[in-house]
Amino acid sequence: MLNESKYHISSEEMLSEQKEIEAAKADPAQFEVLYNRYYEPILQFVYKRVEGKDAAFDITSQVFLNAMLKLAQFKFMGTPFSSWLYRIALNEINMLYRKDKVQRSIKVEEHELKSVIQEINPDDDIDAQYSRVTEILSDFEEEDVQLIELRFFEKRAFKEIGDIMNMTENNAKVKLYRLLDKLKSQLTLNKKTA
Image 1 (cartoon, rainbow, N blue to C red):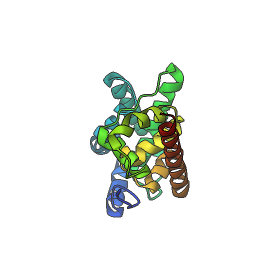
Image 2 (image 1 turned 30 degrees about the vertical axis):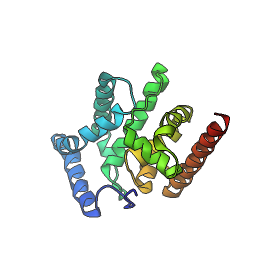
Image 3 (image 1 turned 45 degrees about the vertical axis):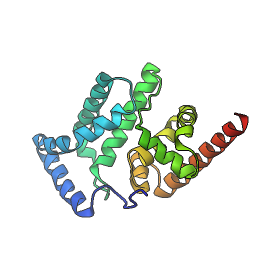
């Protein structure tokens, strides 16, 4: 099952990271440490959600530009710096969808989607459900798909999902389990009509 720690990094690592953030606030050249640590994960996060590498690179660059420009406003609240970066990334992705009326893209590995299917019904034939789950997810609201992606594809804990999506940990749990119930009922409905 998924790791249930509150964050993907320890408290000690967060405190060390906080020192790096303070150093970057004092000297923007020090932002390079944070950039080097998080560039690849943010790029991968964005790339899974947009069409084309160029768009992913552009959005990722914008994420880090925004982060650097607004770093003075960042206040350490006991959460990883990456949560803030992921929230900026989600905002940039959503702006792209709204501005360009771009169709949402979901790029998932087969094993990632299988973890969703196993969570819903471990006794189901995973391979048979794969295309149906993909179809159903394409009709879900943007925020709902993001919640599923963060939990199952990014393997984020509920606390971190809440931080990224600007909701409480409990709200993230409740919403996710309601979505899984909705997905399960639609799969069941599809089976009956097939």
